[in-house]
Image (cartoon, rainbow, N blue to C red):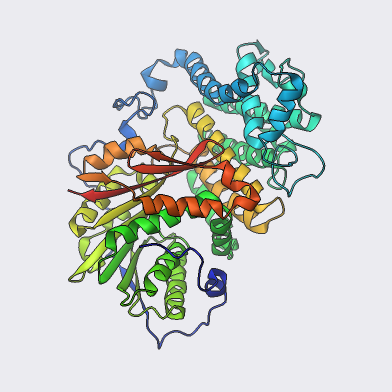
Length: 565
């Protein structure tokens, strides 16, 4: 069964211009609340969690390595911290810089300049790329700015002068940097200051780190070029970490700031839909996921989709359009799980989906919301499974939020198993942002978000208001949580699909092949972005039985399908 890629009715038309009074019409909308939250301290056998695995070695970490504040990184004494942090961060930076050096090695200066320009995929400005930037000159893309800065940081990090690495010197000799413009070199230097500030924070040299952060924030801003924007958010997050660790502020202050910022942006859902439509790898992943659901439920007369982390819900309009043309369309029911923090957004998404179903004349559509304080409160009877109903569970970017709460993650797995779904579709971030080493985690996160910011610049443009909202609220909040917090407060964590495979296997989940139709749908979506050049920059690769989609060689999202045995 193929999805109908071209919508029969504009998503924006339904999403933001629908009538307000639907109470006398079907489809239906219901909200189910869980009981009062249980705050008892439950004890029991210790469970092995995703946090127990070291991404580099694949070995189980000891409790000491997982967060004993009295020990150094990997259990080493405190006096060895300096050497360990430096070696770890330099090795990681070397991995990112290596590709850029290999790409430019052994060619003439003119060829290098042409190679650098071609890596941008078009004209750019101030470290970004895309037609929205400064006209008339080729500029180095954001990803390559980061790689050059990382290479420079490696070359000079071992040479210390009064506590400052000579890598920050704007005239440090390099074959590559000698061929950069002054604005590109300024961006490279800005990133070097950020990297040095992060290493100082890792050493708890807060005064020096604050000086470097202030220098970053003097130049960087949330309205500048891509390099300046990403440095702004990471430098701000470093400052929050210093404030929290020195006791000048608290985690609660950070959370209140994030909640307040979101409350002021009433059009966040609008921005999220705009981002969904603009970024090729988001659409490609979601269309492939919808096709996977269709592949395993195509013969069912009743379909029940359990969405563990619905956002705008726009992806389910694709499923509706694919099913409505059948001679006898199945009855579709969607149950979305919500918590206190996102209950309003989930209910709004439900109302829009109900209106969309009515506009498509899709009979019997029903949207339910299950509200819980914590995911571990989920119970099988909340989903009210009906006879002869085929169930699919869709988990998009939700399991990673429970990595710091393994009891909640284990509870969700057990509930899913009892529901006996025909398929479990998992869409996750394909990255390792769960290292116990702060500097390693910082560097991994920086290069990952570099790919995202570069894509936003290419696909949405410098002056796009929706891009500004997504960067400031969604990505900015994630960066702050990842950089500034630790322990259970650090809920923005990501691990690779190999780690998830190991974890899912312990709960009786077996990976099943993503169908060729799903891969074809993803490729068709990427072709729609051909005119913008995004198709060539967006990478789709098969990984085992799943797929990975990325941007300019950096993995972004993974999609896998599972079944309980």
